[in-house]
Image (cartoon, rainbow, N blue to C red; front, top):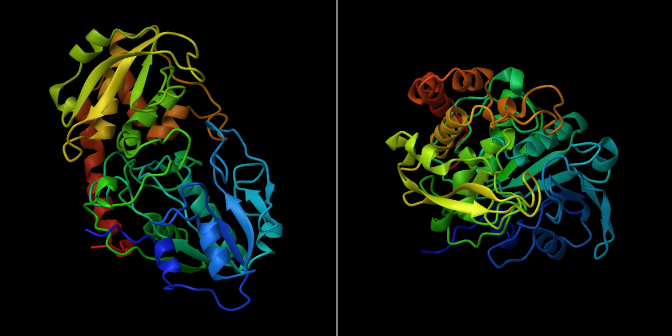
Length: 391
């Protein structure tokens, strides 16, 4: 089977082009490659000489070298093209009028990972809002959702918890591509923006990354493999706790733990349904940086055996529930700040629900908590249909 053609591949094939003299900006990072592993900057500058006037980078930077949350990237300059590289994860997280004055059209080519909390969604929305205010055109070069597009999971984000890690009322596993998300944002925020999506060819909603025929290039420093993306919609919750989510190891999010964990008791405290489609390997690690740096941690590595059966959010919530029950004194929620929110609890921003945290603290059965979000999730599946571009 031929690899999926991304939006960038279709540009390279001549299926989209700007008008003569149209000044272009490009929002991209190190994962913005075509199927020949040529970067979007090089594709655009070759096909449309002298029309690329500015580059923009999301969280972690245009080159993807900056670690962790709230580690800002400075502006710089591309020496090859002699054009500015603007950071959208600095003093401003959206394009400023001065930046947009350089261009007519902003081309966006970012690889999302399929989870609401991944900040590229907020950067996309900020760009759409800025373009709408300043009369700029936006062209999204679409890419696969590595988790597929037919399965969704989790509670919908509560509006009072909108933040840079949750810009709209989406479930944790949202099942949208970046192009589809742009259509959702344009609709729900009523944006008067000249928006175009360069669709993929050959992508189907049932596809995981392994089915696309494309090479995986890390979209951020702690997303090394497609396997990382599969566990991320659940394992990201450890960012709101004092457990290590595996930063400082070679397999972040798949590996997690803390010095105080009783792994045997935690495993015994899990309902059997929590391990559907996966296996927990007891794992000992010593993070080289971030939480518990240099300390010997007890924990697990998640091996996903059947992605169709595995429910990342449910599994990680079950693990969290067990840790809280077995280690009530040692376990703690991470205090603010978190992604430019200085008052609200990071775990509330991540899970998108204060009531979910309180239910966990009160010892509510996990299935009762899950049943609370299922009606909203079913409504979401129907609501998003007009914005779906594939199948």
